[in-house]
Length: 298
Image 1 (tube, rainbow, N blue to C red):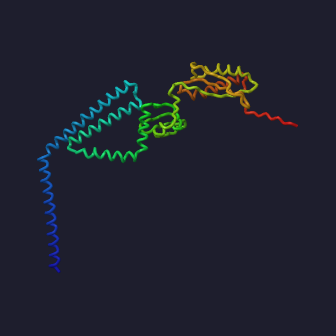
Image 2 (image 1 turned 135 degrees about the vertical axis):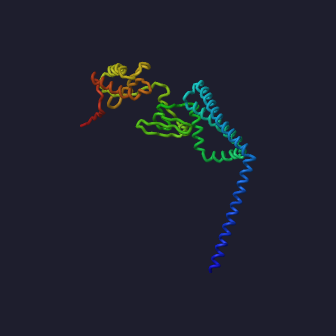
Image 3 (image 1 turned 60 degrees about the horizontal axis):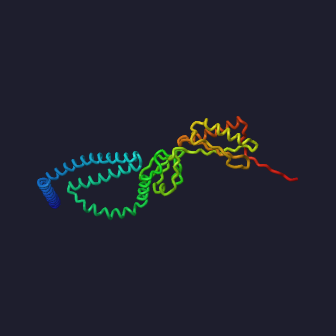
């Protein structure tokens, strides 16, 4: 029994020694291959690494210079701080970086021909996979070129109303009057009617007020026209207008139309109504409740 145990131990030891010798031999072979590579190609590889780093740094500086030059050219064209101007600068930067990366990879000895060849097939596949995103990108480009709105404009886009807070190549963001953030894909924004309340600077404020049938309509119109210029934010040009809108069931409805700057619209809308109501009350012009006259036959 003792001899069998000893023989088994010797066999295990011999197996371990052979395995260790084999691994050592393989490691030595790899080390010799590494030394051979370093001797034959190491110096040129190190030179290529240094050259690639220099090209990368110089390319980065050149890209900054090119993008700045493009930015100045865009600003001269009247597109300063616009979506189109930002788009041109971003595209220029990305194209320059793509060219720089190709040059650096070529300097490192990477064969980019298969990568370029594969881009055609990959692009075809991705085109189907990202149709919606490409549609948003194309619509974003159209918005950038035509600029139907800009940051800070009060708009109705895709049936949603609010102030434009962000516009990029994929989406448009609005802040609603009750402070909700609304994100609209550019495909939906460009594919629907766009109403821009801020584009033309001035806005007409439309107010309707009904007066009693027993009141002097001409007097009411005169009082309204005299009151409107006293309201802060009401513009003198165009001049405010007041006229009869309709003879309604319970009142003579007046259309009151002052003008204001876009930013003052809601203040004028509120303040004008307050001022006119107060002026009517002081001058005996009644604003009636809804009324219904009923005639009963005996």
